[in-house]
Image (cartoon, rainbow, N blue to C red; front, side):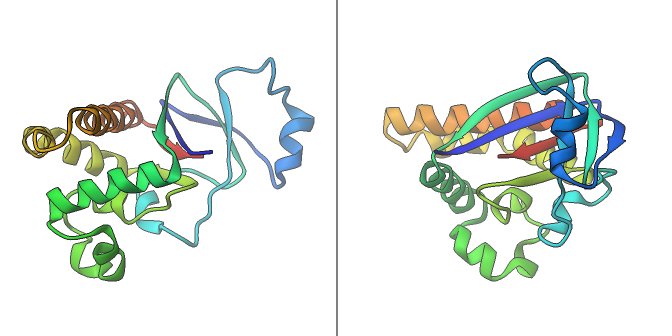
Length: 177
């Protein structure tokens, strides 16, 4: 098991379902393409949905999607720890325990987020895209200190995250599943 990421571009609400089981009744997921149901937990990680129009139970059409594996759960957490260490100079746990202190820092919205499921949409997508683009050179410098196999993995994950946020920045969202 691990963390998979899907980014969606140019979404449009086409239906709202009160119950996940209705999805299977109304839509044949094996033959239906370019639609996706969303079940938003609007209690946790609210900052990651700020400015978003995502509705819990919403079924969305989308223009395009991009998928990648962020890694095993432990692998993803190692990447997130590395990102936190070089970008913020502290552990991810320090960020989680002192969220108010770090909320305006680069990559905060990714570091202080679920490692298993959820959505990032709205202004958070654009903010994270800006973080990934503007810190690319700094990331490359920090990656040089890693062993070649770890360097290749972290750099490829960094690039995959940037690609996901680029796609989602066009009226979309990023889903953790």
